[in-house]
Amino acid sequence: MTTNDDVLIIGSGIAALQLATLINKDLNVRILTKGEIRTANSYLAQGGIAAAIGEEDHPSKHIADTLEAGRYHNNLEAVKEIIHSAPGLIKFISEQGSVFDKNQNGELLLGMEGAHSEKRIVHGGGDATGKNMIEFLISTLKENVTIDENVFAYELLLNNEKHCIGVKAKAQDGTIKNYYSKNTIIATGGCGQLFTYTSNAPTVSGDGIAMAYRAGAEIVDMEFIQFHPTLLYLNGETKGLISEAVRGEGAILVTEDGKPIMEGVHPQKDLAPRHVVSQKIYEYLKNGFQVFLDISNVENFQDRFPSITSICEVNGLQFSQGRIPVAPGSHFLMGGIKTDLTGRTSINGLYAIGEAACTGLHGANRLASNSLLEGLYMGERLSSWLNEAAYDNTPGNEIRIPVIPQEKVFLPEIQEIRDCMMERVGIVRDAVNLQKQKAWLNRFNVDQAYNLDVYSFEELTKIFMIITANLITESALKRTESRGGHYRSDYPVEDNQHWLNKNIIHKNSQGMESNHEHIKTALAT
Image 1 (cartoon, rainbow, N blue to C red):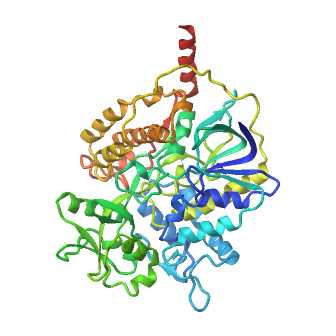
Image 2 (image 1 turned 60 degrees about the vertical axis):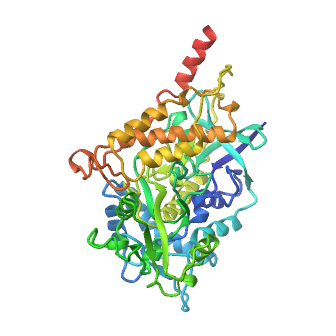
Image 3 (image 1 turned 90 degrees about the vertical axis):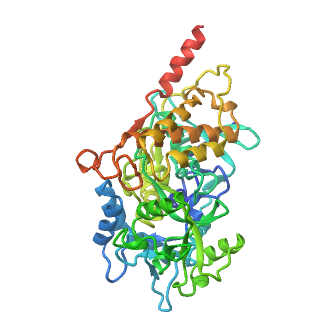
């Protein structure tokens, strides 16, 4: 079974939908999503979108905050371009519909979040910004857009000239289909589900990054994982995200006896950059102390944060004591598939946008609420490129690899992958645990899984989790310093002399060529 489209988008988050809504009506657009259209990370986003639109604010301040949070590992060109575009993006959406919260005078309400120097967070529905944005974008999709849900894209299709011409995907009933396209876009999100505790949607397990790596695309900055400081933590499990905006409204982190844990740790205390707050909470938890978010100083908490209130109530948490038990969990990947500011990757015909991509905006640590902004920007920028370029990336024939009988590789349980990553490659890292994890991951020989057609949804997820986990582990081993979302207890300080602005690039040099060599050998014998 096959289909042919002008634009094929893998993923359904804010970047994917922004792109789809802005593509010309005379181009056929198809969205493939592993789950349903509303199960992307973007739908869960509580905080908002950062834009310098306040009277006392200016893009230069937003740029400075972004660079500081990113520990100056950022791509300065990307930072300037995206942040200067933010006010215009917000204005355009605000004029199209009732997406964002406003005061009685019709002015956008602006919130404060960690590591920002000004109130510049635009939000919708209190703490339901992602939901509001996704619903808005879905409502504006045109008739040229087709959506295929519950389809697992697992192998990029390349032609003889190494152009990407589509993707192979599997439906839940096991049916395999080739989706051909002149332009293929990976917008599958990050890899939060690689860790025991995460704020991410269940489908976000690094699929797009692993697919791109297998095809030979450049992957960068995989060591930089942002752990959100405050996930609701009950009975040893995380139950949902407690937005940073809660601390922006005055909540503080305390121990069970009421001791503020961020006093003397950072000048911004509870609004310090996320890696600082996450490491401090993790330190207390490892020493046997529970940490709480004291919300007693937040006025009208239940009205201001209805989604968080609902998460707490559903899990049986009472607000009478004014405290929410919290723990840090994986939240955002700063690295990913290397792209330029149009979303172009190192493979012709293949683009990446959103969290799966790495433009360099976030550096070593994402500034709060810059991710939805990046998704909006990249979706708009790539749509302009595709609308004008009308590239035909389909010369030559698809490379067809002969199907060779092979046994399936042995794979661990998903929970085991998560637990090992959390323990050895989580918030605090060191060479001993990273080497241990690398050796454990290498046991599974996923590079020998040539014919992915024979694997199930769950098995494909495991293979991609292991590939992505390997990229993170190798990157974390190579970066012998601490910076942003990468903290090593054996190298606890930043090393600007050797590591400032130095990327770690992975390219699957084994790729299609090694598959062909393997096939030639097998056929010869």
